[in-house]
Length: 413
Image (cartoon, rainbow, N blue to C red; front, side):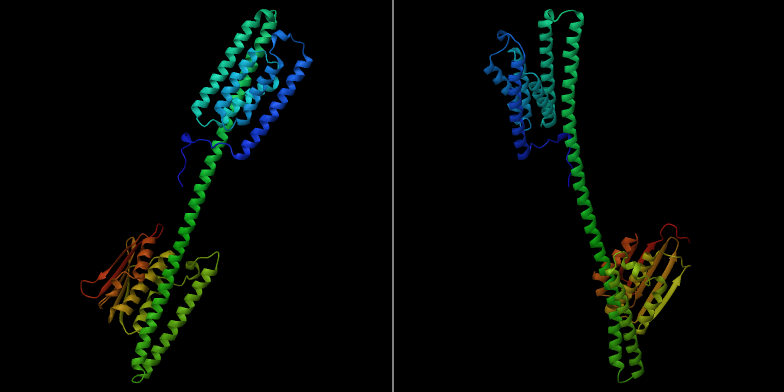
């Protein structure tokens, strides 16, 4: 899932529930402001010539408060309208101050928190605040003669300019902070969604990798033992009447092969049922130290087998040792099934920096080069350990499979 460039991010508009909430808040603020207007007119003694008539004052109060019903839907328009109405109401002598100045603060805050165009929101807020200070300066100069001595003038100046500076700065910064909070929350949600997608993809890959590994194990176990059993059964059928002793030997080999195949399948099924162990952990018996058993079974199947180990054996990781065992097992299985060979040559070489497995037969090797599941499994095993695999007709006839595995770090020679 692609991440969003936060410099271009636009905050979504208010939800339907938020719009309804704004309507009720705007109506409630308007009602409180009108009530406060009547209270103010009742408790204060003013010259009617200095203030607007009551109906006009009610209209100004409503003009300053009712737009709050749209403060999140249209923050730009609402802030400009309330700012202009506030100055105009002051010019006309609006008596209500407490609630209407709160409405101005809410409009500036909403523009900072909900303005979709950040540059425009910033400029409009600065213009509104600047206009308010121009109005304060004009009012101060207009009333300076009526204020009194220097102490009174200083007190009024502090109250008008310093307090109002803090008031407008607070509204400006709080709006920006609210917008930044929503932006960071959106970023966290995007990152969480990306993380969930990555985790799901990793889980799918892990499941696929496990299925491929299990498929390789099943193929190697079943194909090898069943192939040997098939050849032994064929030999038993041919020797049953002419050479009963040889037939009994073949039957014994079939029985042992079937038992071995069942044991390995049972261990694999146990691994599939386990929750804390892998197949490799449950089937630790397949390794390079048991390669001679594979050649013995091939010899029992009627092949002339040459098996040799060159170099000084070194301790190998269990996974690499098992991979080497399975590759030799698959190469021998292909020889038994497809090659119609008479001679099989298996060589294990411990070279400087790598383990080499070389399996050669004198058969035709047709199907073994066709890219079946066995060769796919061999390629996958070699690739896991950063090795190399060669397979194909041998220059002297027959078919050859050669695999090289580099020694992992820490293996001494």
